[in-house]
Length: 177
Image (cartoon, rainbow, N blue to C red):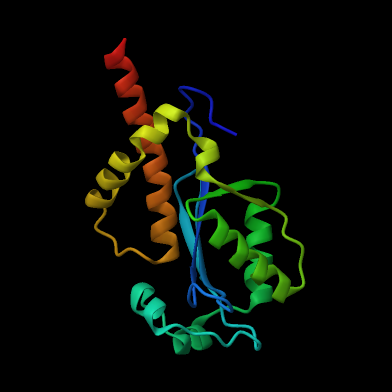
């Protein structure tokens, strides 16, 4: 599904931070950026069977397992919040295979069905927009004072990059005409 040309439609974006990247990894934080440009994130207290922990991943996102145990919400609470906030929507990720897998693991642990769909941002972009992606991403990241690898921040950066891609593609199209 691509946004209509010239569209001002703003997609909902999602980012998931995890305990690691290998087998046994699980979601530890989910961030969302909404069409109104508000964002939120949820720390997730690991389910009892979730034991995998990668210190390298912790060094990247800066979230300790102890912090999750202290401050995180249960898998049931986070799954319920995601369904309440996203029911019937399609949300977009730039790490679709990872994020889809981790969100599925969350819902499986919670015992809930997921009531929203995660899609890849590639399905939003025209070929002209794909050509602008790297430049737009560099521009957005260089202008962002926020620390990366926290879920809400990364979801906002993804959304801002999509919007910047559209601007760059329109500018290139206008100068080509």
